[in-house]
Length: 314
Image (tube, rainbow, N blue to C red):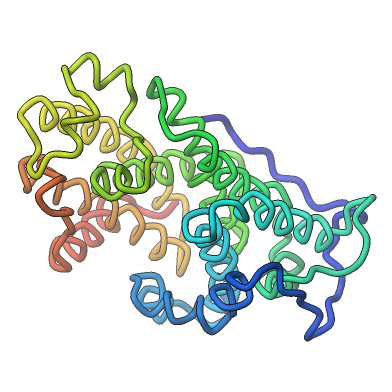
């Protein structure tokens, strides 16, 4: 996990103005499933909007725009008809390049989720690469379904998780190299926690994020992941992976102390949610197959208080 260097977008990368109503449908599925109202309906079932209500409006509108984009990318990568996914993701990447007026890309962004980012990337001076990396992660999901080593998995997290933290730092106007480094650790830990919670769900989607080398070390097979309950060797493997994720979260948690105001509260919330998720897996005795372990709200609140108390703003 390297340090990300901030750069102000060059003139050629500055987002251009977009006109309402310029979207073109890319397929029957996309025309229905990726409508802004469809994305908003899915958001209602997630924790993201609940947390947003606690933030000032000037941050909330930018984070909603980022959420809509990230949700759209994930929906294409997970739910679009298989033959269309790479094409739709490629069209979305081209739209991002149009937004930043990259030489060689002509016209205006066509997708509502990209057009909705225009004022956010301008006001918050967000560079283009994090958005492209989120798309690249979903492109990788279409061709890579197994990871040999933990290092390989961390490389995937650099695309699928870490860009979100970098974008959030820009939204709050507090991006710098040190905070970016700590943010990467927090975001990777959050992604790992989600993977360890969703082993059964990921397998049904044809993906395994548990590193193959670790599975061999603990005597686990893919057949074990399809069982109704986690066998002892899988529980031992999950305990090992949860400890790894917890260590990454602890390494990144000092980020909270480098922030203040809304940014401090928001990042403390991310840290709390990750720690509570990992604790829920442990409380389930690492059986992530019988039921998906989810933390109680009381545990999340307790972890939030802990994160805020243990890191004094500097």
